[in-house]
Image: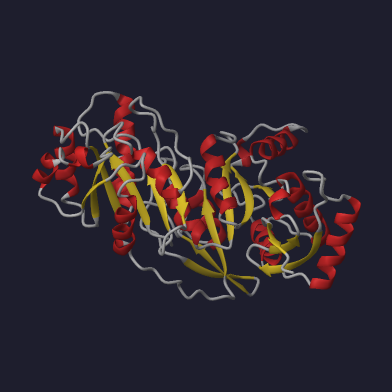
Length: 437
């Protein structure tokens, strides 16, 4: 699992600008109005020696009566609990405020690295005015300007050095690793218990009812599987303090270590924005995906109910048109027996390697049937393809002008490969590379 770094601080101190600067692109919304970032935003950072997950949070205000600000504070606290390292951002132009002091006092009790970052220090003149911040009496005090990229390099050097060095864990290659992810109260715990055949985790209709989770290895049809930390499983004591709308951090932890991801949806509530965010991360991580629509037995159905639900899933998850859809009831066991069968099918495709000769025949036929469009008056030439990796299937295509290949043509090639070789439930990665003379 990649380490997690959380950015916290008062509203409007530049947390989102710092987030965008670190991940190297504009992902978080930035605005001068305080409170633009109301929820947590996540990004994978692979630009440094140690890859990590970066969390941007809403503004943290120790004392507020406003319900929206209270929710933003709860989200920040959750991010701080889950993080391996915390960046506490303050505003160099405003100076040290009483709210900053309260947050700093709270962070002193946190048993993990905390970096105190003074933002909006755009030059030497502004740096002379930050003396108040030394009154915090803390180490790891950094003066930066996220907007102008001042001091970011020095900050990130120290952050990367402080991150836990997590080597690749030795996993049993014969195991199929399954992550069960989804929003609270979609029935993940009940589904886990049904798959295992005994009550492994506490299942309760109250969202967030949980206990500590441990990976569980089980055997089915003489094959071995590992169920990875199910998303949303938390200690009971924490659920009384706060119940988040959805737990993406838990989903990230599960997805990072899985081969196949079961994306659990609630048939009673339909598809929500939180569902699309969690599924989007599974797709970006390149994992095999299966939609599991739980509580299907609770609906009053007619001849069109199933078709409409499938259409809704395909519309909301356009980036996952290849993912199988199962309609089950974890409570009654209805059709849950199909899940492991589908996992086996997706896993076989996820780890599939195609022979180069067969690959290039399909590739040549696809290019001949639909050549790439002319770019700036010149024809794009695609020479040949080879499979570079599995899990997910990754193909390198050699061409003369890689920058001219439009994403729509890339999608066309991926669909042809999927049709020809039956890549069910798994993303396909295409990498275009210039052919050396």
